[in-house]
Length: 92
Image 1 (cartoon, rainbow, N blue to C red):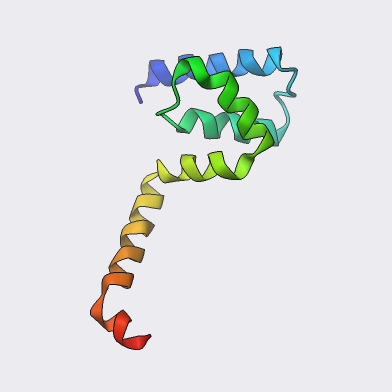
Image 2 (spheres, rainbow, N blue to C red):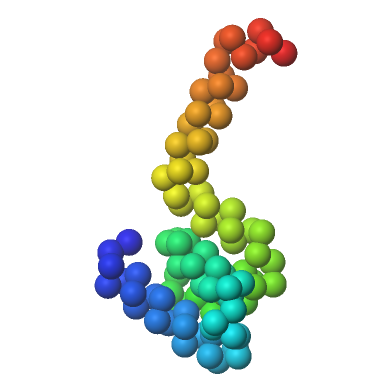
């Protein structure tokens, strides 16, 4: 996501926190904001709904955010390689 779009979405999320009366200085709230921001497939019109859902059910959104990271993709590729490796199958 380009910088200006990310910045705009971040500002929207901060405003939404004000409307929802979330404590913007709370580390848990900050993590929820970041997780929603990282999920690029969340439409801007659904940011409020997604932020509320993230705050209530954090494990789901964190998995979605994690999947968008390079590190997750790298480890997933390693895991798939290991699982599909004939040597691994012989060990089972």
